[in-house]
Image 1 (cartoon, rainbow, N blue to C red):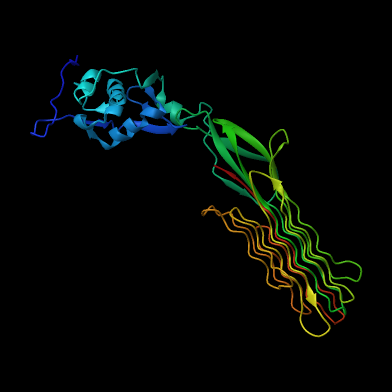
Image 2 (image 1 turned 60 degrees about the vertical axis):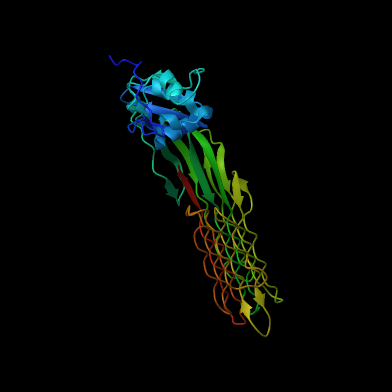
Length: 380
């Protein structure tokens, strides 16, 4: 048995030897709520380090001479030494680590130790064999979407799951023959997201509804408005809504007068902790002499910003909302409005509104562009 009263020599400015203290390299250190959990697989134990002693662990991860341990961390270092978590300390007692550094008598223990029957399994495996599913994107509805949650991590029983939804864009308005009036662009769909706590080693089932884009208005004498898109949502097994993003509205048709169609409003509401709005479609523009362009569709909302509203009588569709910090959550661009005597263009995924149809003095009706469908994403 090692004699713990033996104290290694210390370095002084005159050049004597010193003991270098360093946290063992085979330990796993995890931060949990401001505290640290240290897994010692070899020792089959888990050590809890409170928040006021975490600086001692960080110091020991870098390595420090006994004589250089700050006074306010000596007791924490001594406690880590006693727990057997320091390299090269088999001959260093708790008191020697403190007094040898010029300290006083130690206070209460800093580290709390728990024995584990199988620490490796506790941190990396579920007894039911579940591992966490990869993030998945849905572009069509699924009433029984499955997502597995594996181990939550050292000292944890829960983790967080992210739900994201993009609503569908509205369709662009059509135009009526011989009226020279143009259709308005459809509105972009909204975006919503939320993070919820889930339990480790559990299989979850969700009802995923993916919103569709609204149809472009079919030019006709007594109809032709673009239809509204539909929203996207996720519900839990009790059919409680977790996240929901509303859709953009359809643009109105152009008709005799000439009366140009108004752009549809962008989706702006939903259920979630972060909600961004789709852009509003531009109005159609048509006169007896001059341009007869359909209004551009509104951009779909993104995780980092609202979709762009083309504004006024702009023919070009609005840009999709930006993504957030490279998370890939950008919205789709709105479709361009049609030129004179042409159909509007479809919006782009996710959730771009369709462009309005261009006006005509010919005997042909023209159609608005379709709005783009929405999307749902579930993942860590």
